Image 1 (cartoon, one colour):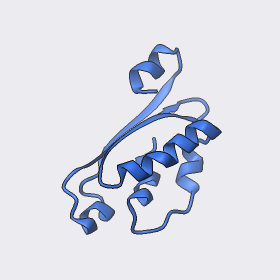
Image 2 (cartoon, helix red, strand yellow):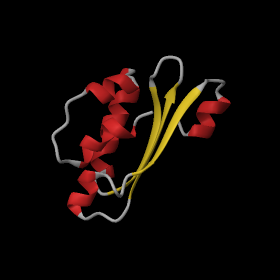
Image 3 (cartoon, rainbow, N blue to C red):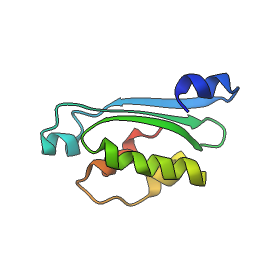
Length: 96
């Protein structure tokens, strides 16, 4: 779900939009553009949707797809262990 769909469904939502180009992993890689928007249910923390743009987005989006399918929460994604420095390691900071 995108933010509009989540709100229209009647859920209370938490949204984090992140311009990640200055984040360490993107700076190390010299990537000029990195952006994420993550939508979660405000009551349960379950991930409802994610939009990613930039290097590694095509790989990192699979983490969010799995989170949605399996009912994972923002806490689950923050507590996961990610290889560093990888683009996926930015997921912890991108979730609301």
